[in-house]
Image 1 (tube, rainbow, N blue to C red):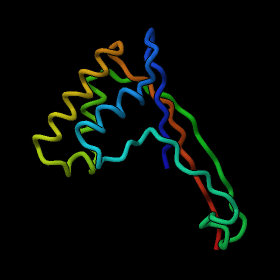
Image 2 (cartoon, rainbow, N blue to C red):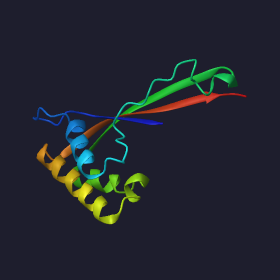
Image 3 (cartoon, helix red, strand yellow):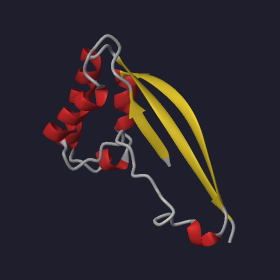
Image 4 (tube, rainbow, N blue to C red):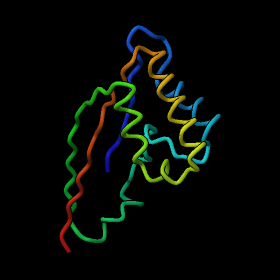
Length: 119
């Protein structure tokens, strides 16, 4: 699982996720926004709990992408590929323009989570 958080655009007061939400609401509301935090898993809902002792590890990393790099990667996501071509094109164009208006790059903080258990 990768957890994605977008940073505030440098020099701008608008958080990137707020700007992106507006684009997705307008162009493709059916597409999940991946920068939203997933729900926390507690012992009562942990699907690995029946397997015995569970080891959790997390690895944090950051990535900065230009508007073109962000849009290029976004275009490969299956929920975006499933959009009709005109909708996908309009969405990607709007995302590119939004990133450019916020300084031209998006910095994202990621957390990859590893869960290990033995049967």
